[in-house]
Length: 450
Image 1 (cartoon, one colour):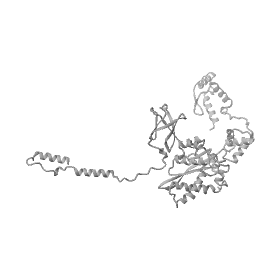
Image 2 (tube, one colour):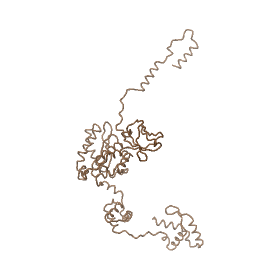
Image 3 (cartoon, helix red, strand yellow):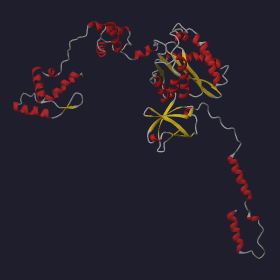
Image 4 (cartoon, helix red, strand yellow):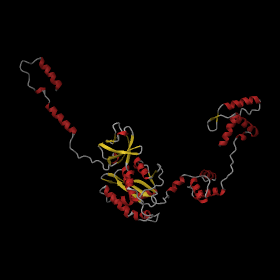
């Protein structure tokens, strides 16, 4: 049942009693006042009140035209939109079904200088049997390409070979326009520190992208990476879980890496993570970047450098971006604690919430900021840890075996103690004449002690 029919039935339920022609004018008036005084369950499921004038108007309408007169007529508004623009909207949708109403609106504005609103276009397309089907855009995204260099970088992590029984991970970022590998680094830990190291090296050599597109893995959802992008003015975009559209290019690169690099490393495994990074860098710069791409018709390096050398960020801006930040409350004595370290700050900050800015590899140098403003440097009072726990670059080497068997030593000490205990049964007997009841007592003590 449509909305208009529901409204007509609601009106009929309200006035059904009052339309009885056997009622006198006085009785009908009393009934109408009663109907207007109480609440009625409306068609939308809400309780509403209806004025007396409205009830009288519905009664008159029913008497003139029956139930159909209670059903509201559809609104008929003169179409003020030029028919040719609506026809153009339909043609644009048929030409590319993935175009949204908003996109069609923009196209018509560019072509005609003016356009109906996106909402008007959307309603017209639906009435014309051309509704937008969102599922189609997913297939179209696979062919998306950024219009210019450094418009979009896509990043991901690839699991690599074992080195010294430890898994390695490749953090890699590809420029969507040129297909160049703009940032990459092999590491033995899949964490935000190594992802940031790879990204920082790429930014220093290839410039700043407008947007960074990554998945929802733990290295890419860290607040530290979000802060770095915010400081540098890079828009950080995360793909929706289960919707990997737009990641086809980097997945294709990873397939090439598996075939051309990891496959070869099975025969000649790298001796160390440094050796793996040097080998991979040589392959990227000598092979991948110098091979003509099948879709662009150019080598990745040639297409990336076609507009000229990129503008590089300053070292100071990179250093500021990749510092980490944590918030702490200053104690009443003007100190803050962070990861086992104690720092002195300005006593005037006591009791306030401050932000500590630091290099994760150097916890001795910490800047203090209050309300976003520089508030001096934190003076180390007690330093137990020089590196952030999440920034441990190398796992702690297990200590060499000492050969000390604690429980074995305890057992030996117990054995020695048992050997040294007094055995009263082997002590010399009492002097002659001293036997009797005392001998029985001694025997009892020996049994209780022994």
